[in-house]
Image (cartoon, rainbow, N blue to C red; front, side):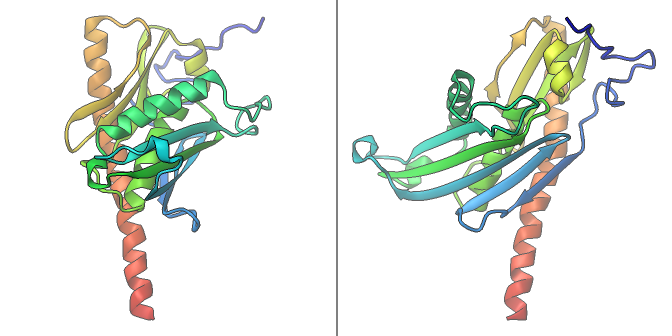
Length: 245
């Protein structure tokens, strides 16, 4: 059995050199798929996730139609090549559960009542996994919906706080997730100041929970800024292309 790696160094830095409250490099690009109504590629360090949104469109099968709002369907899936060992392409119980969790988080912000008797579909594909795939996937899904022009109260930003060797750390990577004592994935609508996804694996004290939430909210503001810039850049580019024509 492999020994546990040193996750917090003597100088207080983490295994990848980050400070406890430091995000990995975040990169966001929207409008990456021409065949989707909206799409986004989100990178949290080594974790890379792409999301595509379709709709509102006719809901199929018809027995699933809801008279007063759109039905929101989400599929979260990890590509076979996303992990070190090849993953089966068949959906796992974890993927089915996370599809439901992400859908419920998005339902808190999407104005589904504006599109009765229709369907809105979001497909999330994890291209490379290095911890925080559900939170990066949630961010990507919300940006894909925004790129598709689906009205929402706010974007949703996902970020995870973990506990490693007794230290709270922001935006956990794969090793920290694997060997840490706790993992707290959170989905935040920063402009509303609301939490729309909240899960905890492990145990945190009341004080640790308060600190973890503070860390998550500060980080969500940082990612939110990058997300809004990516949307702004796309539409400025579109305006420039129209001017050229």
